[in-house]
Length: 162
Image (cartoon, rainbow, N blue to C red; front, side, top):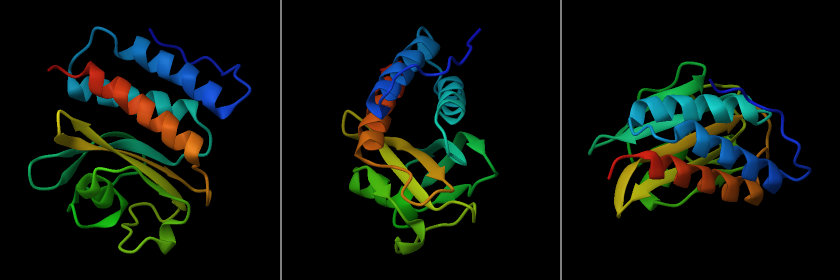
């Protein structure tokens, strides 16, 4: 059984390195997308401070559909031309948003969210979905978070069947 261990790393990059190793261990040997997404969401939500939502939206060929997550109930469907998740999916580029209220077309599933980071999940040129993390703090995410979240998402993508 998994047990989250408090980080002993002094830097944010070090904490992400530990979290990446925990994610590798947690997902090792399992290839079910939903099971891995559920455990991955719980791991990140429980391990990083100041989050109010962490989860997946999977691309169904037309739009993003909510997948496993931790936090308050979420928007179920997001068009690729709407909000931070839609921008990450359509541009296939991580969106780092220090103030969601300043982002044109932001979708407020939780009014408490103030900042957001969304990583597109792309494998072999194919859009799988996005990894979305929100915080009630403005400016919560920085370039260390971008690098850490992108590396974490590589672990998740590697767990999926070919």
